[in-house]
Picture 1 (tube, rainbow, N blue to C red):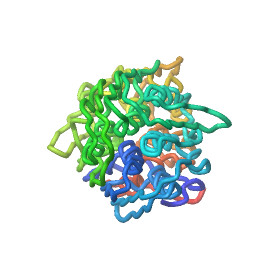
Picture 2: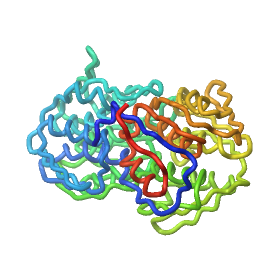
Picture 3: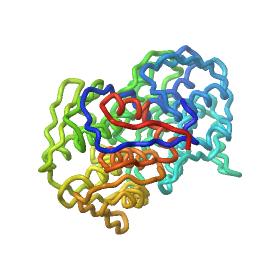
Length: 425
């Protein structure tokens, strides 16, 4: 990874995109799957791990916890023979998803200390559902001085619980409870479980390790605890949000692009939304192709838990709506404050009216290059998309947000014909 904290991306808009792009492994699958290697003393091999700052932080956390970690060309080997129960604050504070070491540490060691995580500026993402799940399994949970301390001296015991929160189910909370419950005594039933493909991917890895799990990918997961897990090999699923971002890029400018190494089934609602606008998408077994459509129609979308429209695609569709010669609207129900990209898009000439958790976009107004600031991961992607079609030069600052979740995004876009370069800020 480059030192992207002090870098900016310069984009010369208007260059048409065409060609093929390989979609990387999923960030949101990789992080909990890497954490799950802590559940066994045996050797685990995880393939297709994307080269991102977030995955690099997770590997550093595993190393600090005592695991032997090796990485080469997207393949990560982990052997957690001896594991410490305290996750280091200086690493945990940099990444919200580091909370997912809580489940495996509690399951294996029956205790853990994890700092309240950082790395998120798009509104409250409380960990109370994670802690509720641990308490339901019989653990004692204390939050003191910014640390979460969990003990289960008598071991964890299976229980029935509901992890549905006020804005929907919790993906990382479901992951944490599932990882803890695989070594608990008895049966655990998670009602209101997150049904995202990334949760199912984690479950498939745990099953390869010897766990007994049914229902992953639905809102009801049943886990039969086992005495121990063993090592396993696993390939991470394709990143559906990266794929959706490139679909938006292909819809906005160029002569058509093809995405390879992707699972179209994981993108069904995004594909359906684009088709309703009038974009033609061709599906292969592991590929998608899309072209722009000057007669595309606007859309009205509401973000929902999977299989609904993903909140992680909301910002990119805001950028797409700016170039559609029609009106569109997006209502955000998962993270109502997740509209910090709107002010930056308006700096580029976008006509957007934000009222509460809803944005109305009047498309067709020409976008012009301007200096803009990335505020979070998906907002940064929206700014890159807008910059690709804007007239003139756009400077996007705080590239570290992009590097958290997009593997070599600038290189992939350049290979498709985009004119852009990464420079010191």
